[in-house]
Amino acid sequence: MAPPPDPAALAAAQEAMKKFSIEAWTLLGIGLLVTIIRTFGRVKALGLKGLQPDDYLVWVGAICHAIETGLAYCVGATAQGLANNGMTDEERATLSPNSPEYHTR
Image (tube, rainbow, N blue to C red):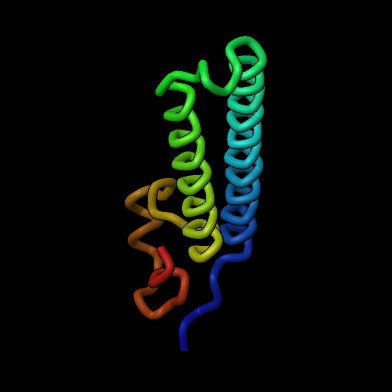
């Protein structure tokens, strides 16, 4: 039977995931808000017929950014906030190959 994962490590991973989620969704919200304000300003100044290709491309970028944020959140949620990038070589070596944490990371 695999040993249970370290509660402190799990708590730290969950806290890191929470911080990541807040940052990612906040950045997406700010980006979408700026895009909406920009589009509103351009339509107000030029009308719909005066919009240029960059006015449409900004929405392609916003949609791509929203998809990327959603996918990043899904990957982090599936991995329960666990990742290899914050671990030292010693921490990796101490993980039991039979533990669920080992397979998640």
